[in-house]
Image (cartoon, rainbow, N blue to C red):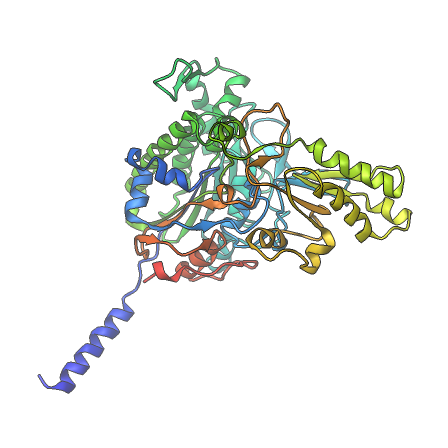
Length: 517
């Protein structure tokens, strides 16, 4: 064969290879494990034999994925996953915040114009406070007939990832033990969801022992008898994750997700890990146990998907909405820094300084986390310079021990802050109409809680709260261990590229092209 013939053959082979289509998934499944620090994948690796093991062996594992926003809380994390937006664009600045227009605190998904369907007779939830589109919205706009469903034990964790056009979002009512939804999606619960609730699977856990530490006489928790107390306890036990997985199977089966000739989207957020982590802390046997149980639950769900959709047709993403701070008292045993700072210790000196400088009055209307909302009407009434009021407030707070830095509204809007990763996370998260007037960062390992409180929380911009898992597994994904720094914001742009739909409107991320063919 001469040179020309060889060249033509190589070109033809190259062209054929380039034209080989990547199999599109029939179902995209976003799995979020609430409060699942990245290091849980490494610390308990030898005990994972199921779903997490499968993801780690067969997935594209981004080992340096971080949240690039502040505070690191559930609503922001879940709104970021499939929008790719930062809070200054999405409008989701916290789990809840003070709404100046109404003069009351609102949650990220509260909506008085809706009713909850099922469970308690309370207001429903919706994604109306989110100002941007999600991947599911773009999928439905591009291909009518696509189904998008969000599931979680928390309302915000089911509503926000699924987006505005979702067919449904379901969450758990801790008073009744029912899976519920909202009139935002439909006028009544689907019959299959009603039938699921009527099975009363929650009652099967009555009197059951949750054994989380076989080596300790205190390593067992007995569940309550049937009733409201049991329904609440389920949420804070690994049995909540089991209940959610069973509901997810029913949703896939009844809605025929991934079985209709289109690419559907299911978002599934396991909340019990978060409740357990708050109570016991990341170094506890409870967190160890629920992490290993999560591995088994995912194995069960993947087995179900294998039978119904075929795992070769499922694109799975594993991530988390945030990490968690070690319990301060545990840190002290290891000679590490950390402690608890009550809200009154922060806001009390601030309000005293404002009264001394500008006279008595209600200077603080409310707060979101550690951020105070100052009284703009009082500032205008006394013809004060808002920047000076902010400066006095910030100066008073900055003198309090264990305050790392204080950023005022005007400093943030002008970008007049220390240029580092932590301040940049605050800048990306400040929404002029919704955010407080000061953003107050505590020293690493310090928590804003009551001094005599137990357990722990999250919300800081530091790595123990920001470092999360990000693993892709399925058709069109190159497995491997990827070490460059990436952000949770990159998830939405990557999926939009894989699915060939428009990138969500507020996305600030970049597609992770190295894992794609």
